[in-house]
Length: 386
Image (cartoon, rainbow, N blue to C red; front, side, top):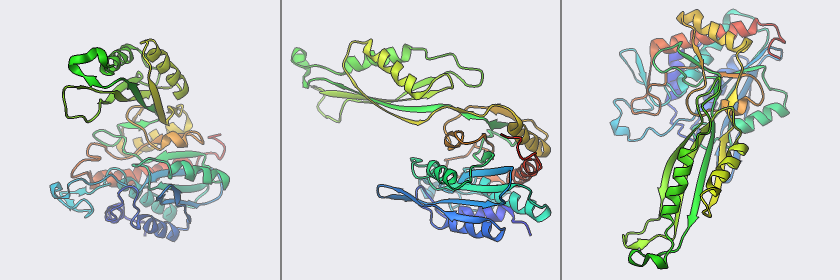
């Protein structure tokens, strides 16, 4: 019999797999996939002292090859005593499933697994289906999807198309499909000064006014007005730090500012950094700038793959989801380098919150959507995505 999405979701939620811990959840997934005929590969990757569990599983060898990308790690539940039901109990009340990961995104993983089991029960697979499951999506994303993709390329497993099962709908199923994501650049600016007494300012060099003028220059700069598919590039200051000195009569000897830029497809991180240097040098002050790009902007142009996903959603919901690029980042930013990728999953209203939940009806309908998506992809001409 095909797997039941609710039973699967409850079991997945029961594993307290807070990033980067696995707690056996991927072994459970591999057991279920193996019973369906999937070949499973456990792919732990390490950098430093941290080891992350990853799972790749595939059935079939022919095209078209569709890959479902997801994660079994979850964010911390926070104060457990504030949950109405235990965060890892998978409790159902009034046809609502409660638990960490119900929406982000163990419910989605369960829905795709249930969809695959149902499709294989009633059809002969023409192409291939695979799962790329990481335990590092909610964390630094260093030992997860990026390294699994490198392994997949080395071993001939790059798919024709990929679906990332992140929750994309604000309120109800059928609202939105994400076809791209903005890039993310994290930046730290350090300005040196000279410590001294506030009453003898001529003997000191206060970094604070320099930082204020630099931030004015950055905030006044208009990077762009958006592109055809993306909203305008946006800079947000996240930290201003002049040191943890208790005495209010001391001028600090240095200051530091952190900010994040979410940038659209008009920019690359390299061009953005060059522009930042130009803006900051225009203030006339010395500074040190360090930066890290979490991911470049990515976009899957509307075409056969996006249409298949839209049609599958419409088959079940009678709605045509919008093609959007809003929101934060996801592992789709890594996958877009290899094949067309879109994101569609459940409802994101309660993700990362106390009492995260998903309606039972929505999870069952999500499984139906995924099965229609698999069917439409499997029946597509083998070379239609190339």
